[in-house]
Image 1 (cartoon, helix red, strand yellow):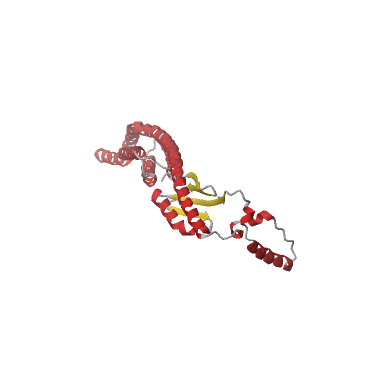
Image 2 (image 1 turned 60 degrees about the vertical axis):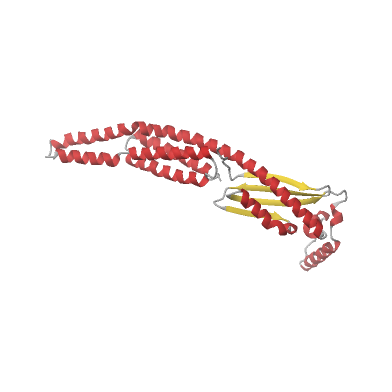
Length: 293
């Protein structure tokens, strides 16, 4: 059974809690060469940060992860009831002193004290409960993120296949013109031979040997065979799924090398024009492949 192909771009969100408390976890991911995990959350969750980090590492191979963990109380009482008045008084006293000293007006609104640093300390049992909800919410967010990355991954695979099809259409032009190209080169060399042999003595067997050597040097059939092999490998990757991002990047480098060599060998206009378009499609495939896990 083929594995799914995942994008490194996605979003997942989940909540967990009780009648009085709710913890929300949001995860946003973008592409990254390795794995970069950043948390934005209250210090109340510090004791489970390592466990949360391990859960991310176990479920994803690559990407840049921004994880936001927040909580709110669901009691009927106002959140202003949780404000620690001593912390507020100390803050206002310090700010008033600084304002007076610098002759500036102090502008404070009641809502300024709804931040966590002005809240009453949470007891240990509440912290344990919050940590449990945080882990549960993270697990839910991870599953939603996986689904998001899978959907985005399939979209990118569809785009890659579209550009690969365009690449192959131009590649077929090169393939069809490859024999014609060699024949044109041989005809041009023989024409030059006929022009010069009347003006100067030329060793015809030696000249023909040079023609054969030159034609072999300009032959693009080896490049064509290698391109076919790389395209077959690319099809296999997109079919079997799994972690394909780095492998696609490697294949595009190889295809670029063979495509460039084909273009440098050919003097036929149709092949040169096709090679330019092939390179355009490879760059588009590379851009999509960079976002795959």
